[in-house]
Length: 154
Image: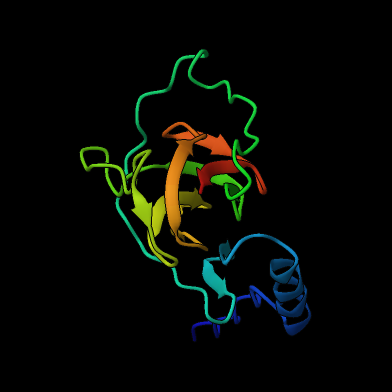
């Protein structure tokens, strides 16, 4: 007579799920995906809009390109648009596509500016204001930190 199968250990218990949800609220991330014991879990903040985009890493930028100049806005109406999360910054939806925005482009609130890949999830980053992109501060395929200035929008 075959032995009955033992149930697999629970990958996540309710206490862990609550802790993960609280942790996610305290981060700049909109979504996180984790796997444990063969069970995959994706947590997403309510109202978080995530766009999945296939993007291959671009060639590494030279050390000279990775230096960020002083990112202070040059005019009183200019404002820094800062990274809402840690991840890899991409200016376009794919390596062969044109950048979402260029210096001098007019943008509207809600318009896509870039993509930040965080934990293998592509997050479309949208402008929080209307204006003109006067400076792009981050390089394509560059690692960015939470709060790092990415654009200056006037």
